Length: 451
Image 1: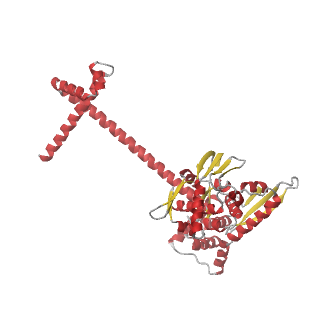
Image 2: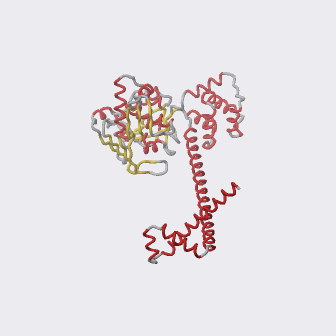
């Protein structure tokens, strides 16, 4: 996985974790509650997070992800500020601490609207549990909410957000729109939405299409200029219902990969002869392995992105392309569709391995229990045979010792011949007899060793 890609739960691209309207944030220094009509409730007990806070949070999530989703991070404040693109002066240090305080005071609630890819759930959790600056080395220590990190893993319902693109989108509106558009294209390159509904989803302060549309257009222009992800926006107006204005977003193919292929076409085309590249060719369907148009595409992406990148997207294409294999493969390679599938497969393999390990543990526990029962039955048999072989005098001595070793409560029951008296006495006698047998066995072993 690229070190710049942050796995993001689609629910938090759909529903806001931060607010692009800075006026809203400025007017809520003592906290606020925001709810949509579908059952999502957002509570901030302190200042409302804005784009700066979103950049900090995404960076911290990236660091957690790179550390196998560690719930505790220990980082330099200088490192955070520098890699997030902020200055390293006193004001920036203060703003980082203020951001952590904002996230610590945020709680979100889904009333049956949190979708995990299979079902809708009702859940409620925070973002950051606590944070501190360590006195010994001045490093920043942050404790994520375990439930939040669990949600961010996505469980098969996630998208990757490119951190470098996210932080360089200077406009807060463009950044929030970038989040929404990031999750809106999966099986299609088209995303249609009512203009008012999009404004509510962002959310925007503007309430009328005439005010919303120009700002959305500007945001799309900024996304297209600042990122490799490109979108085309058209507007459809209903003739029957003037208020029903639909924004139609179309995701355009990335520009860089085709240029790479064009450059590859200009020079002499040569297929690498390494074992690694041979493994890539073998991953193609047999009928595609000799097609130069396919091989040229693969060579171009192999030279830039490496073997694993190409293999996972060939695998994705093999499983999903129903026709026009070449075009489907090109699109998969351009957008790295295979990344999410590969991670899902890795997770499934880990689940299978864990289930196998748990099964082995259960079998071991079962075998150990069976062995324990066997030894217990064997000991009972030995003890009974041992007691039966003793003279009457020894049997009376065993009974006397058993009474002496008993708790006062059990002794009283036995002496009064109460309920269970015989069983209590026999259990104690058998314990003493077993100890004598074991001691005798140990003595014999010692004598045999020294004889």
